[in-house]
Image 1 (cartoon, rainbow, N blue to C red):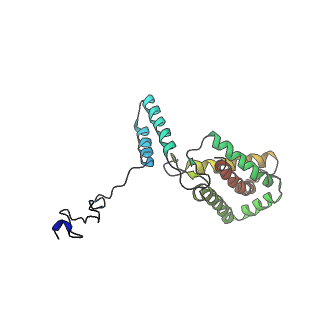
Image 2: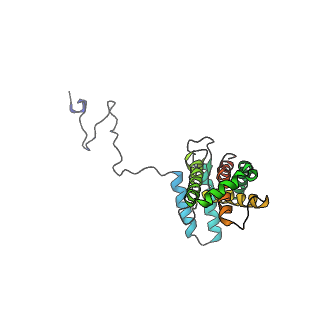
Image 3: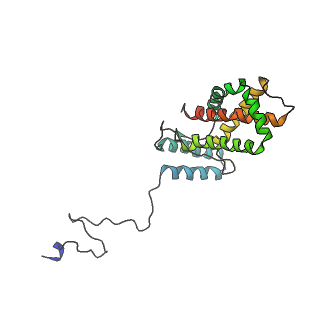
Length: 213
């Protein structure tokens, strides 16, 4: 048996050949990973922030749009990639808010619970926190859509989260005021009532924004 026929004999580079004589499969010593479409989009977003020329910035944005169409969605219920928060999203969120919130505008219990929250600030804050967590869960955890955070406010706060909560809060204020369900002479009770109405409205706004796709 010659050296070339010896099983498992190591090559000079330290690798072990396969049984069929092919070169050994060794891991990349640098540990580098293949660049993804997401890496490209992040680089383009960085480039967009430093480009001064309007025409060049437009070309960068076009390249970003093209790259986003190539980005594969995560496994989600509807399998779409969702970014940003534009007028169409605001309209969808408003529609969801109205559908879920109309019962809160006509129920007398809304004002009663609002008065209770006004008398118990800890519960008022807790209700607000729960509302935010519900919206975060629907948008970013439940995977109804593959939602990507794009250009967060102050680099931290997602625009979609602020938009959905803002639409719900504004709908609650306008609806309760227009239908005479709150008395602004008592701002504490009014705040509590708005918060109570905003809970289902925020859920409806989040679902309305995502489900139509």
